[in-house]
Image 1 (cartoon, helix red, strand yellow):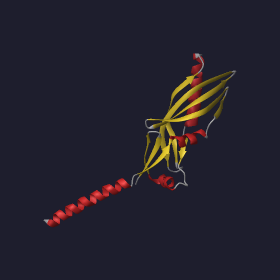
Image 2 (cartoon, one colour):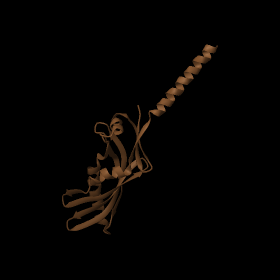
Image 3 (tube, rainbow, N blue to C red):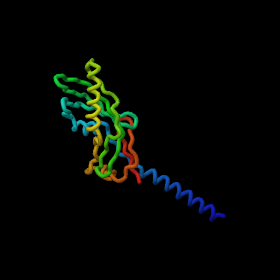
Image 4 (cartoon, rainbow, N blue to C red):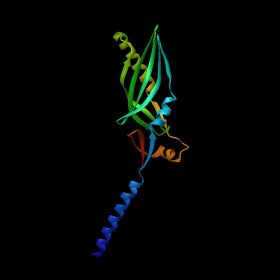
Length: 176
């Protein structure tokens, strides 16, 4: 009877050790919004000629919205002899690709396009141009790359288990 109780006690003890060691294996890498902002800002201004129009996006601001990352930016469209200004707001999911060690904006949506002009007919044309250009440019847009010189980040390439937004940071959870 004492042997049976001892076996149960050993099994319970082993289970507790396994649970506690599993918790210890969970590590986080916290990437502040400012680092993502720095990476994204290097890719702007973005200029694109589209037939009769020239499109420019400047001054992107990175923000977090729920589990998504968004970009707010100012745009200029030179259409024939007119220059139109406005702002746009785009957000999407964060996806990690281990082969590049990078995080990308994917499945994004154009949340808002504002136009600083009153002409409604022109607004529809401009919105179509903005949607097309932004869709092409942001498809697979890299927002951050893990630093291979940072030991913790280089290990992360193989062990990323979860990615989420917490406060003003992108949190990468590592585990086995």
